[in-house]
Image (cartoon, rainbow, N blue to C red; front, side, top):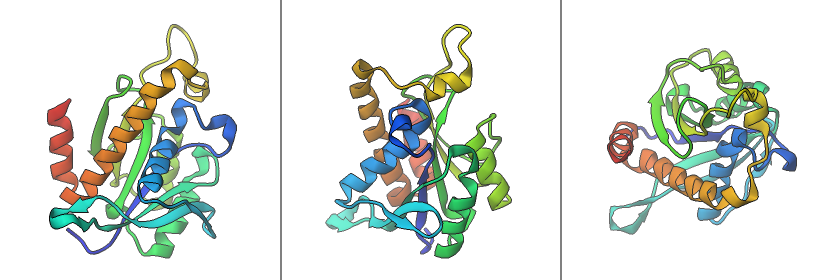
Length: 199
């Protein structure tokens, strides 16, 4: 385990009109982590909102490691600039970056941890890869499924989730926050093995 803190970034779009969309699952998980830490995100000059917290609990009830949780204030497709500016400010490299994002290629409410790889047409990931100069960062892929029928993928990810489905999604956000805590306290590989053996 490195002494450098993890930078945990949830992807999404700013503004209330996007809050309950599939594209904003990353933002929702960051909100859960902030709530668990009893804090709120504060504006940072990198054009992000962030909080410096301790995450999880280590053996003996010791507070878990220090991490930075953050969301970009800019739209998803240009979020790489603010996130890389924050990482530079903190002295955190891509090897300590965990990005939480929506994933069309996984069924709803399924999760996978992944290191590196392609962006699968995801504009937020493309922007991050471009600004960090590498695709080798950690991802928590949160399944949202494919659009029904011939619905356009962009319309699907930006559509507001039906109110009756939101409790189910809220459970998913809590489960994702648990996975993030495992990454931070157990290490990425152990957390990945645990997650993938459960599903």
